Picture 1 (cartoon, rainbow, N blue to C red):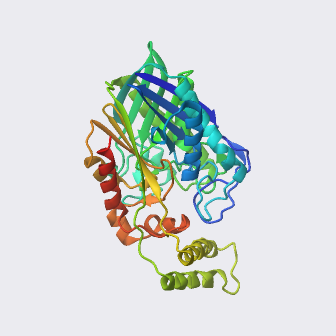
Picture 2 (picture 1 turned 180 degrees about the horizontal axis):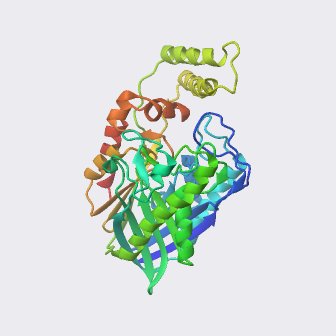
Length: 442
């Protein structure tokens, strides 16, 4: 088989707003801690070519993915189903995902972004060379905790101990997957996959970088000159890095520590990776719409009135979190009412994608997937090596498990509103069923 890699600098200019952590924070970047990259891996076998792009971004919308696919098709002729655009979900990058209040999108950056992402993919295809693919699954500990079912944001002095482990490690990824591509004994590139919010740096930090996964990948590339390394985000929906929500000096200090821990895990995978027999490549792409909770004009109008009372209360100030959060609801509810009046659907379409690479099955979803949803989805499909990827080709918010969805809160109720829509009816069950069906098409 043939494998190729490509890389493109996607660092924005300093001053763009960073994405995440609260409504209308005005969190503008003040410097570059690490460059941001789009990295691509192309594989070709038996007349089929696939390319996977991983970029150091919070997420991208379908319009960006469509533009990337169009550019790649024009340059190297790949069909849209053969091009996957994936994001690492760093919260220390530009706001490229349209989330009300969670960072203002820099329109010039978003306009030129598809060209930069496509450049990495095109380079990867153009550099295809005879190579061998290897894989290892290695322990990955001391990095993450489950923020829904465990203790979130422990003290820094606790989690920086080398022997720190979460109370419930079984509710996080206990391993990471590492893939390598070699030719003539030389490492062409590698990819690692693990599920964890890259949020070592948070609401008080203002530097551009790929967080611990980006810092670790950059470090490993420097150790292997000429190689290109991809990070593939897994089911991070309910998983945080062990360092989170700390002041800027502490966060920047911890960034290198957590990055080093992850890099050590990947190094073990690079050493242990064994050859994979790849007899065929295939891909499948499906446009789909997931059911939302029902809503009528009366309900939306009443909900809007409640939020407008907060925003327009006597003495209300934009400095108040409650006012800024209510503004997020107001913006979405007004738009939903407009859609209702225009006869437009309230639920937006998205897509699911699958790559089969010999014994490896990659399931790409546009969600921040919870761990239990991932476990159920992977149990429903068959392949020796199964990986579920989040933040792929689109960004549709969280896919919480049923327990979290039933109790409501941020992931289940707030984020859909921030994304301009309504909460899902049963994203857990629907996503598992549709991924199972998609896998049968490979």
